[in-house]
Length: 498
Image (cartoon, rainbow, N blue to C red):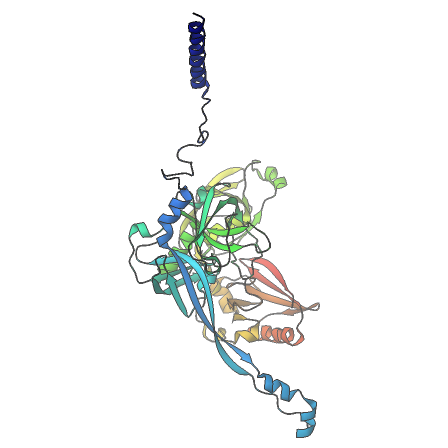
């Protein structure tokens, strides 16, 4: 009887335990708190989502091998020895003629990454991977190698499009995502060929967004990087940065070599616009609005009628005969939206504006006298404004760039000022910057150089001849100098140390 009573009590306690467990969900479930969609373990064999994505996208990720030829001057060591020996000077009767420098041609080899994004063989990569390449070979994950040609490059964003003569199935190209939808903390996957180690996969998160003002040697002028701690190293450049759905949300571009876990990628939404221009035209034609914008501080918001959580750009001036003036924009207007998107910062405003094509119509929402007003603006062409695509006969001088500190320049006279509505008193236009110049990454096509300062002396630049004289002083004396220039209507300067 006693045994039956004890057995009954045990059964009662077991039933109570089951009921309590069911009610309070005390089961040991390793996936508790993680939705099925977010679970990184995605198949029955225990492979992670990262592994599944890497396997599926690998056929579209490529290794890019590049060859560049360049010439350099050299003097034979024997010539240097015999011409520097004072005994031989005396023996031959005084100083002999200096040996002539000889020219040698050398092939430079480099590697990077890229990815196929269209069925007809177009590949996205970085400009610095393929710039000035004489030969490009694309190697696929199955070992096939195909020569590629450059379709277009854009140094100002460090983007490029190349093409192979090969057709691809849809499953063997990458799908482009939406980088605007990224959150800080989202998973990302970087794939590429760091240090020639092809098909390398690294995983991390989005550490930050909208990174700009990075001092990258020879880097892009327009910066709006995604920062990630997914390992990015030399050779990863041009490879895709993918989200957890396997869509491209960035193009790996740079790394902070002095730190660990700090890499940068170009947002795919910017790349989509730029590469479309490159694919269609081979170059990027940037839009021109015709205003001098000014940032608004937190202290100025209330005075100007903005809410605390609202950002805007103050229109300081509106240039005459420009798209801005024609649309009705006025000085002291406050731009709060561009194409329905709230303004965030002045840098991002300039960056996003430059991504539009000339001739595109965009809408601005502005505050004027405390009231909201909408304006539609048909954007102009910045290159036409600066006369960079025009042949103006005698006004354009072809110069050896080495005599001009690695710059290609164009003179500006009154006729060109009037023709392209340039509001400058003097200066020369930069049309190109050699990648081996000290000024590469600091000046860019379209900048107008107005003055050079050496040892406290200001040299006004009215012509290419003026700049050539100043360049000779800099080269002969090997001195530090400051260049004053205009960019998009703003006065800027850079200090160059030798």
